[in-house]
Amino acid sequence: MHIKALNLHGSPYMGVFCSVTDKIALIPSFTPEKEAKRIGEVLGVETLALTIANSHLLGVLARGFDDKFAVANHINENELDFLHESGIKTHVMKDISAIGNLLCMQKHAGIISPNIHEMEIKALEQFFGIPMHALLIARSELAGSSIIATEKGFLANPRTAPHEMEHLESLFKVPGMTTTANYGDAFIGNSILANKHGVIVGERTSGPELSRIDEGLHPGLR
Image (tube, rainbow, N blue to C red; front, side, top):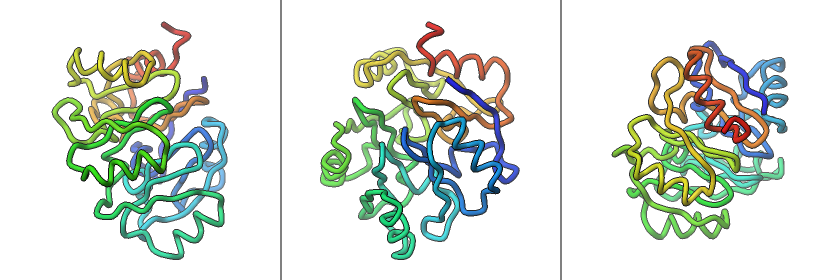
């Protein structure tokens, strides 16, 4: 598994600016060609540069699996058309903008904020074909910011209790580990991009954090 430390537009919060699946990475339209190529190479995916709701905070405004993305309710028609023309299937959230902060998925399960309406959760289950579980993680409703999950392993906010970790392991069907990133950021989803091919962390991530991230997402080290 490739792992690389990067900044984007001078920021180490890669997970705020980008949204990644095993097939594609949504990246801000300002991303230089060299950095876009590096992101694609590390994660083994194509990159698609765009805005959502005229914003570059794609990791906040979109969350996906394979070629499907749930996107913010205020995405505009031109952006939606661009996604469709690029082969991306979309589910526009009814009342939610920051869906990237509230949802984490891999092939076995999705963890979603309990604050999202039950009908919307069912709509997401139908759209992605993945069972959704409404849970607080480390007493936070921000599941998308608190967990990074792939089909190989997952990482969680360091305040996640042991019984929560056991529950997540049973849902994701892979081992997990707690960690921070970017020198102490507990909301690791803001700082890390990961899929089954590779991992990108913010450049402020320390050596010990990098070791835990690598171990948590790389089962060969277990």
